[in-house]
Image 1: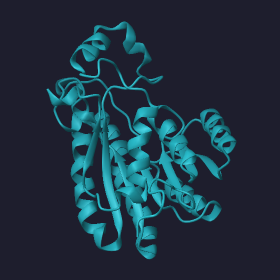
Image 2: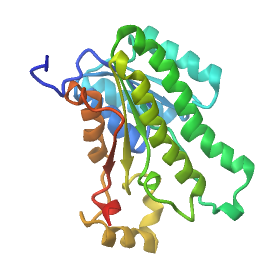
Image 3: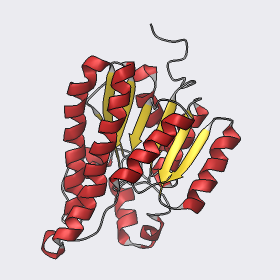
Length: 254
C-alpha cells in the first residue's frame, strides 16, 4: 500500500559514502529533510564534523565516521557501527569516488587500479555488506552514483569512464539479483555540477563550453541531485529498479 506521503523517509536509516562534500553532502541533507536518520562516511574529520552539525540541526539522528571505503576491515567495522548506533541501514548511497585526468597512454597500472578500487570495487563490497543486512528484512534501497561518462567515453578520463560504465552494469546485475528480496538498486548519472571540486574549472574554457552545450544553459547546483536521490530512496520508487537517472540539464542528449 502506498503511504500518504510516498517521499517520507521517517524511520529509515540512510548511509552516504563521501557524504561530507559536493553531491554527497547535498544528498545526505536531502535525506535528513525527508525524515531519515543519516550516517556519512568521509576521509576528512573536520568536514565530517561540519556536516554532522548540519544534520543534527535539522533534528535527525546522525553519525559521521572517518572511513576509507577501500580499506576492507575499516569499511566493515564502520558499517557495523552505523547499524549498532542508528539501526539497520535501509538506504545505501555509494557516492565516494575519484577521477584522474590521464589518457590511456599516460595512465599507469597503479593509477588505473586506484580509480577502479574506489569507484567500483569498494562500491561492490559495501553493497554486498548492506544487501546481506537488507535481505534479512526484505527491504532496502541501493543507489550508486555513476556519471554521464558512463554513457559516452572520454579521451581525458578513461579509467573514470570505465569505472562508471561498470557501475551502471553492476547496478543492473544487482537489481536483478536483489529484486526477489524487495530491494531496489538504481543509479544516478550526474552531469556537470558546481561544487568545491569543480570550482577551479570556472576559469577554463570548459566551463562555458558546458554551458553552451547544456539545454538548461548552466551547470547544476548540488541540491538538484538530492531530489533524484530522495525519490530513489523513498516508497515512491518501489517499482523502479535497475535504471539510471541522468541529472545533467540535458547535456548528454545531443
